[in-house]
Length: 156
Ligand code: ZN
Image (tube, rainbow, N blue to C red; front, side, top):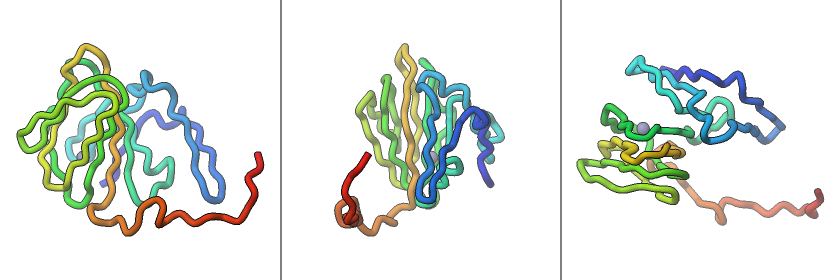
């Protein structure tokens, strides 16, 4: 079931033959976006999924704002995708398989499919993070192996 995303009309998409570029605005205004969770039928404020706008084909990505004092009200696992949580501002905690981990700006947490996860903002300021989902064990080669130099002088 697809995710319904609200608030996208305010985002301009610049597309080229080989790129998509968007500006989602300032982090503090992320709560203008709402995602409707297809299984829970509930609206999640401050969650912006970007796969469709960016035409991503190998990952899903969301940008998120969680207000002070708020916990995600459920645990979840994944069936195929590992998740990487990249915390970019604020402080909070993740709980994975019953273990609590403090997170803050600069924290990155990778969770395997079967990890039972939840997270909260137990601070007094907003928490901002990016979540990337990609199919577990799908990576064949990484940056420097996959990059191919292009024989073209750099001009701006
Ligand atoms: Zn997830």
